[in-house]
Image (cartoon, rainbow, N blue to C red; front, side):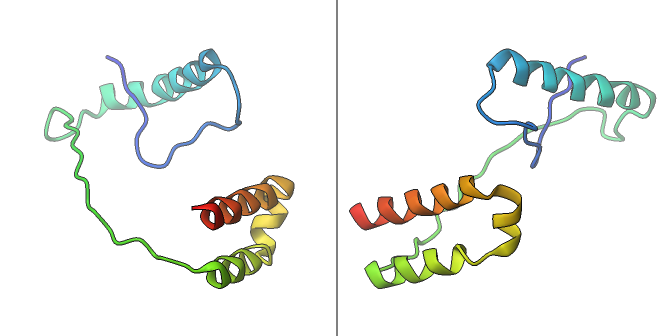
Length: 100
């Protein structure tokens, strides 16, 4: 039996080789599989499905883009956790929207 991850389970690092991400996935599966074998789901099988829900986009003018970026760069929690990576992402977001 192979078990995969779902929901919001992200690898613990960025820019790593696929082999490492695969190894982490196998670690998760090795942890979960024994419990599933002991306590099988009541339904007896898993199913997956996807549903695409179109959502309207927020449209910001240049002033709105800059205001949102400025507010984002004041997020102390994000800055404490991600520091320069967060600043670069906000700068990229700002320039991408401004160019578009």
